[in-house]
Image (cartoon, rainbow, N blue to C red; front, side, top):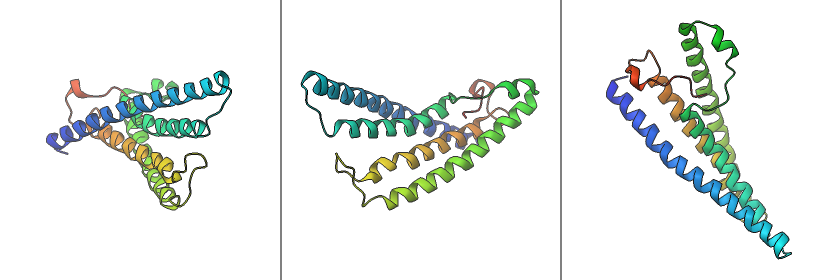
Length: 174
């Protein structure tokens, strides 16, 4: 891949990730606010809001799937390092590339299957909010697709892929 294409992919990954980080921050804040309001109503006013638990749950689900892509971009997923530490640096790069390629295949499959679920869920509505469950399910294919974007970017930018030493990421994103 040409260095211009690689740079464009890196910019896209970076810019999309910044937007997703903002969205995740807003979703976490929304979840906290909704939960806090529900606690005030339930214990302070002795009244319960019928929609708050469902809204907080759906906000949290979106946070999880979008947050997984952010963690991928940052290389912050949990990694078992015991095996990787005992192999040579050359083999370490090969293992990291293999893990990234398997992860790309997994998240691509997840995005596809989750998209099928979204398509089948349009007629189902949530109990309290009365919204289509497909809107909740849509978090899975979107999060998986964003994760694939960041994984592909890592593979293109990885050490040994013609990227300068200063631009290399130290570990695989998954």
